[in-house]
Length: 99
Ligand SMILES: [Zn+2]
Image 1 (cartoon, rainbow, N blue to C red):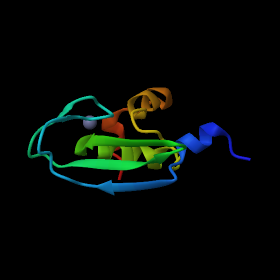
Image 2 (image 1 turned 90 degrees about the vertical axis):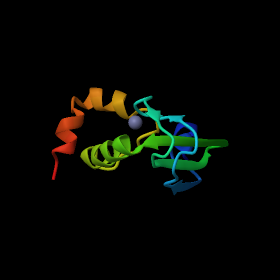
Image 3 (image 1 turned 90 degrees about the horizontal axis):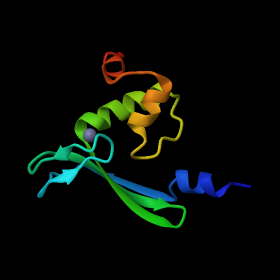
Image 4 (image 1 turned 30 degrees about the vertical axis):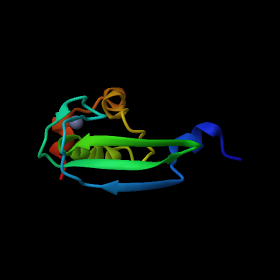
């Protein structure tokens, strides 16, 4: 039987788009600003019973993709990238230098 935590981690459905910002947003990973006119990743989905959405700047999207591979595609909740990288003791430049 799945635990509630697992349910909350793995979305029942998820949709990813890459829109252009029409107003400024905050990146969910680096908390930096996504400026008007910049592209970003927009993910919406259902985690457990919670409908949620996340905006990620393209820099963090790339770092997250690399890091995800680094941890063998373990589930990585949005907003936890930097914290998890600290735990794994890997830096952004190390990840970006990966082939
Ligand atoms: Zn970011």
